[in-house]
Length: 437
Image (cartoon, rainbow, N blue to C red; front, side):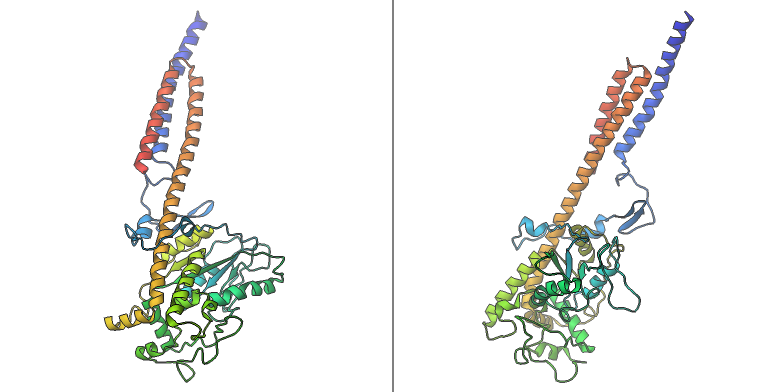
């Protein structure tokens, strides 16, 4: 008799203790669904802001939507036809293998700043070795004395000062094989060309101010089809050592000024129009061929950035190569070009001198924003899939916990309670997901 009474008391105690435990578990389940650890549905304000937050596993990228998308048009006007391949440019950059990143540095496009980001601001297993007082950094692959980056701040001007697409594509493979002592036949590298572009009027004015201060770039080779241009093909715009103090009117008056349509010229295959021989084709045909070539080469580049969109440039680079920057890019609008006041007539004149660059930049800007939009949509989709997988994992764990509690509670009536809790948890999960979407 006493034994039976003891068993009944034990069963009642187990059932009584099961109820508060199940209630606590239910609250924990509900909180996990509404406010999962990686979600921003429930959060506490913090003084820490920026692209990066420090976690135990390292740096994790945290993009703030308003900052990235505040200057993105709600609807991008479609003027050009881009394919899915044009928009999806993700590559599996093998820094341990033979992949090489080649930076085509166009003057006055923010290339110096971006070039420093490449050697000093990327999270790498083996960071570039930049010694104080030296212009170049050593950017070797992990465990190998071979460079993964071809740029001004890593390999120097190995193919000439501000080498263009025509020069780089014929020179880089030879230089890299010679540096690493490998034969082209035995080694098949992947060369990923990247560059920066800028609004043509701003870039032109910036170059004028730079030349006015004494810059010449007269040591540039301008190699094409195995030879530099003759003096007749590319006459100088000034007679002295440099063009210091040149007025804007004189700068615009020189017909052989390489500042005119510089971005198209440096991105196009010049051999298609006889290099710098202006008599090989008509001026109209030359412009048409160069623009089409520049568009094709830019479109086929795995990545390019725009000076006017620093944060989006950073985002696209990271999404494209799977690499992460340590510090966020900053947008600096107070440039020397921005401080130059010009009339509408002068602006029209500059746009006329750079008509090819204006059309290229319009093309590049739309492709850039579409690539950004495409990547943001893919990122959101990846996040939704990740959250779904995590919810599935949590549901499996919760079912295991409930089954264990049901077993400890003695079964019976508690089986119905367990089913009810599972149904509530599933409903809660669906509701929280609707809120996130």
